[in-house]
Length: 321
Image 1: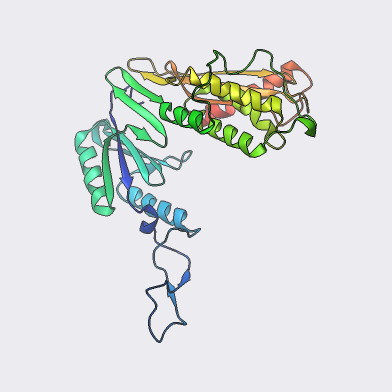
Image 2: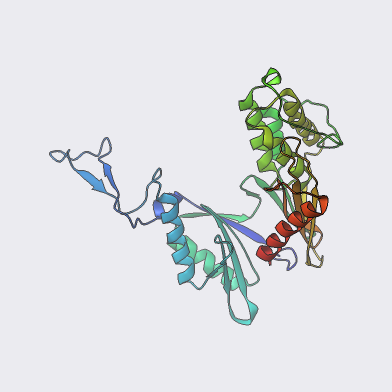
């Protein structure tokens, strides 16, 4: 949306975020070492505000920041509770997205933006990071042509972590017609290593829909991985070796129609014969939402499998709209 309207995206970071929340419950702690009051050693402290390590700390912070946004005229999205929108006169708009202590926001009015920035600085101790460049592991490049989102640094990090930084690249993330199934204990490999690889790849699917299917596929065997499963995971790493610079480019000037595609494979799982559903949604020419996962039921025909996939896709369309 920022690309279509030529709005820059900015970022703020809240310092010591969990110390800002006010507690609604009664929470008591022992007197910490170095702050014990003489002759009252048996007494405890009652907390007024949250501390790091408390289960209530995240909720207390969210309640504080939500109350602040609502007080200053923002509306909370009923379907995505981390998204807040403020609409002013003559179509002026400010959009804020919150993720714990990181805030990204865009606007079409400089005055509204300046007032928001100043009020946030007055209310919380914050760092103004300027234009968004790096957010939750996502590298963001904003230019006059559009916005490019990638995870190049993260790809290099996981290749180095799993000793694959000098591997020979391949051109596809999965072999054509690959079939995997659960095997006996004779071919077992280190399941800790396998889970680490799959977990790392799962986070990479935030900007790489091209590996979504195969990462979902190999994640089914984390309980008892075998050599064939590990080789499939390493092939994805070899594919990433040659595609480090891949990402999502949101191009300026494209018409932002929401278009979705859905498909399924029939009885693709070799163990329980369940099918796999997949969908992708484009806004303009670039993907904004995608999924690939095994269906929860056993379908009796390819037609039924496609109906299940289409239903999942339709549910996502309703939520996106």
